[in-house]
Amino acid sequence: ERIHDVPIRNNDDDLDDTSNRYVATMFWFILSRLFFVPLVGYALAYVTFQKRTFGLSKLARLVILMEFAAPSAQTILTVLYALGLGRVAESLAPYYFIMYLSSIFTMTAFGAFALYVIYYSS
Image (cartoon, rainbow, N blue to C red):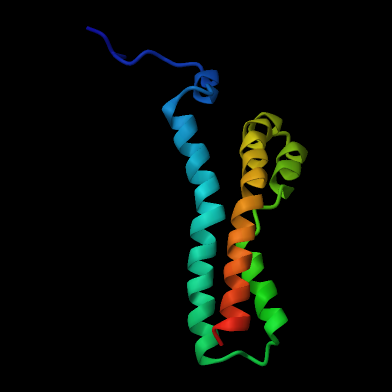
């Protein structure tokens, strides 16, 4: 009678670039930060700014909206190295590289939309 039907896998298999989980994780990591966070943030800011501007200038509101569209900071990589988790930091680094390249397009799009919402629709 076998106790373990599932073979034990090496942790290096989880970092295989061709695995579906790796690709799905990469897309979720990038899409959540570059699309979902700005969409939710812009919606909340739009509703909030329609009711009350809190005395903020248009430029201040633009800066707030652009902060929603900015990619994640790479500070976590430095912290992980400092905590001795260099392998985890190395596995996250490619995600950040792709995120920063993608943010060229997403920040441009969200920035243009923010300019329209703040300066032309109000």
